[in-house]
Length: 124
Image (cartoon, rainbow, N blue to C red; front, side):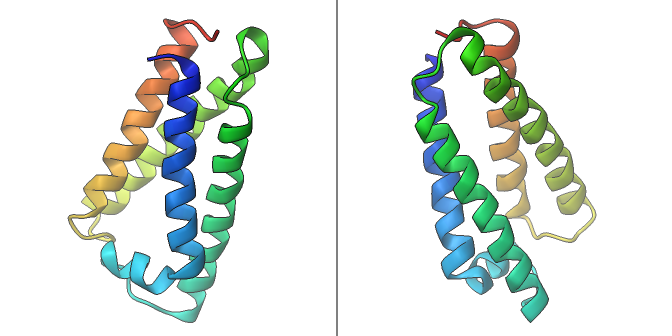
């Protein structure tokens, strides 16, 4: 897989979650076993806006190569690694139900993908 394909996949995942969190936050929260409240729904919408930003950034940067792609790859690696830890903590701590493992898996796969392009694979 090349970096362009990986960024497109990341964009699609981010944009799909963004739409769900912005448009139907209560449903998205219930999927993960989170109790609906006005504050949680607002926070979920804010998270959705950030995923929208990230998805669009990945989509628009899909043709970056070499040194131009490095900041995007490094930030993707760090952000998804931290996200994997946060999702793992939330799932193991019982904050999220068993569906929380899907969040752990998504963050982990994306972190590993970015690690590949950061340390091994070409960014062309």
